[in-house]
Image 1 (cartoon, each protein chain N blue to C red):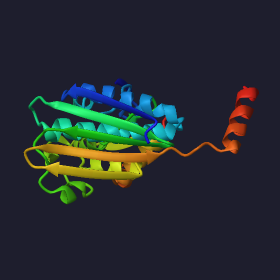
Image 2 (image 1 turned 30 degrees about the vertical axis):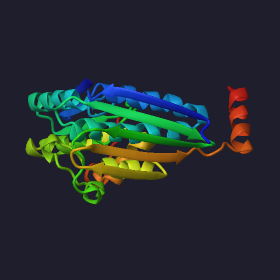
Image 3 (image 1 turned 45 degrees about the vertical axis):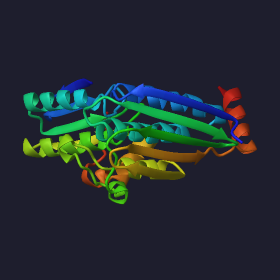
Image 4 (image 1 turned 180 degrees about the vertical axis):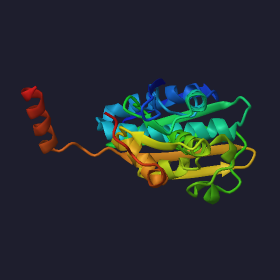
Length: 104
Length: 156
């Protein structure tokens, strides 16, 4: 996972660079929580541009980080969803909870 | 009846999830699926294999078996374990139902298998294990698709 910090807006971008399944989601979750806790952002965006595979473990990941973001007073968004990722998020109701945002 | 057949066995380690879905996808590619159809198959296999590892065997070690068949333009995939089984299959299939919410599990596995594949069937006996059978028809590519593809290839 790659991280980008934009101090002006206190924006944290978490760019996921691996496949998302039950095996590697734990590492992504651990790093995301660590970065969020450390930086205390106002906005957090998960960038899925480099994600070539995701199963339902991605739903738990995003909902869990959504709760964590709420707890520290940050807003969470997702970005660059491919067709099949979009379908999984739509199907599970994640899309209703978490907005899709544009990254420059 | 079947034009091809394969079998795969591996121990219930989560690092084998990627191996399982990539192997089945490689086998399915003989039917010339689109990238989207292949992604559907990979996702469904990943869900079933994860269920066997997380729920079937919990933290114990066991063997997950995959068999797959090609029949005309259809792929049939069977994923089985000899784990603890599912007490109430109908309930397990309900969207958002999970026995492990504390591990951030979404309870969407069966829903995803059902909607990404054409057919899905679960057979489970408590104490003996679970078998998920699913199939998907790979739509034959039309002449139009091929023409478009050729156009694309010549233009680039």
